[in-house]
Length: 115
Length: 112
Image 1: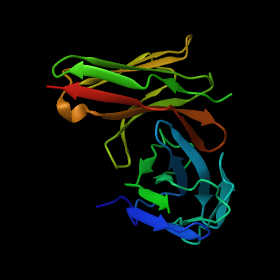
Image 2: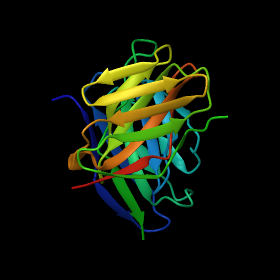
Image 3: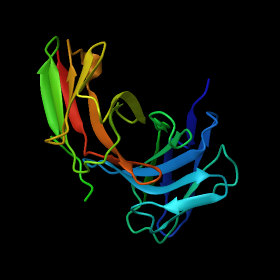
């Protein structure tokens, strides 16, 4: 079955540590995205990538980093510089830009808690 | 500016119709989406509407778009307890890549 997987589902981190969230898709999508969701708020875009080896900052990129070495994978690192990292993180992917409605497909999310 | 607004909460009885409203700000939006999120899960696309349409119906779901007022609504007919979830509207901005701006989400509670 095609889809997006995120791991782990729950992640606990001590203050001052970096942590990497995994996102993998087998939909053959070119574009991938990372969002952050906080209670009572909509999704906010952290980073996005339209093609392998290229990525751009979204609205709240400070304290985060990404890489896109493979089409299928778009890992997100939450660094110690992120002041309030506790949140629910969602990864998404979509097809080629300008074709059809470009639905974004979402993974199941990773809940990160900083202790 | 980019701002999508939704009411935070809606409560209905099973069998009734639910109407979830959304206002958006960017008149150049090409597509408008409705996503559903169940507890602890990712978002699932329910339906979308292209900006040159006024209405779209898909089984129990009806989307109405008023471009003049920048108002979008989602009507769920014969609402079931399984429809209890958070519903997000999102607008697709014409920025050269598919940037979605999401509303804050409306929590729908369906009681038996």
